[in-house]
Length: 49
Length: 242
Image (cartoon, rainbow over all chains, first blue to last red; front, side, top):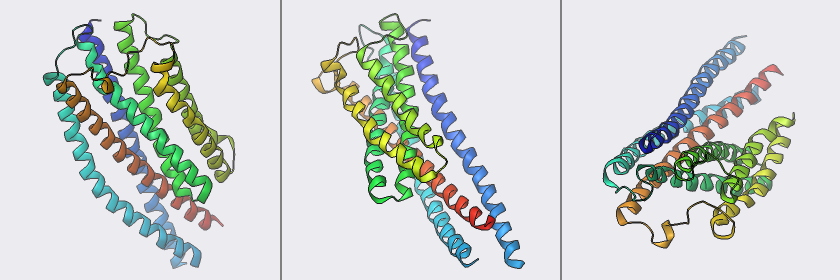
């Protein structure tokens, strides 16, 4: 690998890891939102009971 | 049921405040994105190529900011761990864990980008040099900080153990920072503060540092909001089960 290859590889790793972290975080937030909706429904049904 | 209602009300207030945070985060995220674009443009187009190391030296413009922001993240863990031990308020723990997660990610990137640089300059991917070894130890300390809470069933106890690791572990940060001055190391000297850089190089470094700092703030707020909401939800769920 030449000089530019090392530079490019380092660059790709940095952005790849940061992008993966952001994506993982968004996915967790999305799951949490659906969990929250389920919980709200549960509470509503309890209230009706 | 009254407690659940109260808790849900509190949870709703939390969610509303979290939603307000998201809008601030969008503005910060855009700022971070613009700064990153500026930094990338400066790194690729504006900054001159270093004579001895060539293009590879450009790794410096994200290797150094990543390391500085990782130190900042661990300093935040240190301060918030003290606050947690003192006040026993779980919100400080949420902020500290989030900061440690980002710090570990950034330290991993520092080690990886450093390896690419080392391979070309020293012809090895890794060497047990003082600076590199203390940085690896730093990574292990904060990885342990993230893992230690899973060793105990009691959430509060785990957070307390982790806070102790977060406080004691910070000792390694000045050791890493001063390793190039006092240890035997192949790592380049701290050229930034010793006038070894051209003005264009300093400008690029500052823009890159600003970009990674704003990114750190965005990620920290996102992770902390997530942890706060998750904790509120668990509390409500436990109340419902009881």
